[in-house]
Image (cartoon, rainbow, N blue to C red):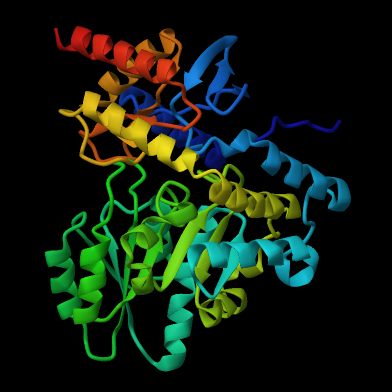
Length: 406
């Protein structure tokens, strides 16, 4: 008779599952647990969640271009002719004339010689940074990355992954950055990395001081303009262009998924920089190309921004209005990212839920996205928000904060 033995438990599987459960429970206990929820998008500023319609103050759709007829028409026409996906990496068959046209339009828009389309802004930051050590190695130079402490996770993760020397400098602290630059050896290649508009605080980098410092102590400047593109500069070309310091920027990173209303990203710089990205950046070489329809949508978005400057003006006016109302809680700026610092995770969740009960979607931002003790509401504005919707936000927010304080 054959004896059938019960299966032996997979000890490793059990241990891993216990570790995962414990880690998730730790997040729940600390009010940092995240979960997804299906959202039905109704238009540029309204969504439906669990059957309830909410005014959306959580999106980066600053210019309302996600629903612009010209952009939708451009994407639709290309999908009908070429299909949806690109089907291959750009160096195989994924690169079309629509991609080439978009890169040309982006370069002209940003005032650079060339641009390289990427599948996301995160990927663009990674590709720009990890290609540098390989280029420097050919010159026999050591790379030193110096990055603003509040820069986006994609920038910090990319720098860490290079395994080269790197240091953060306190947010916008030019004095400390100058000190770090002074510590470089003569043959070192210093790379300074920052954002133009910071994604969680909505404040701006001191680009004029950086440009001045670059004249004093030369370095390569990589600038992530994800949240400035579309909102600042002529035709939405970015904060560096608005301040007249774009010549100090060596590589400018833009996303197509925020003010431009689409998906993807781009690295903008000299022709040689962009050729080097194509040849040395593994995230570009080994990724499927952005769909041609998304490239066409980006080209259309650039045209819309040039033809409809009132969108940029409107969102910045709304930002000033909201910031005036929250003057004690908000740093001076006219960016459409407006934080309301509440401190603890539980308070941020509590106020966010009360706003949602009143038909307003304003997310609670908690660690590790922001430092401990700085949990907040993150209000983002669109030019498509009506005056009535903004007044409703301010009224409910004021009453809710007063109730919490009493």
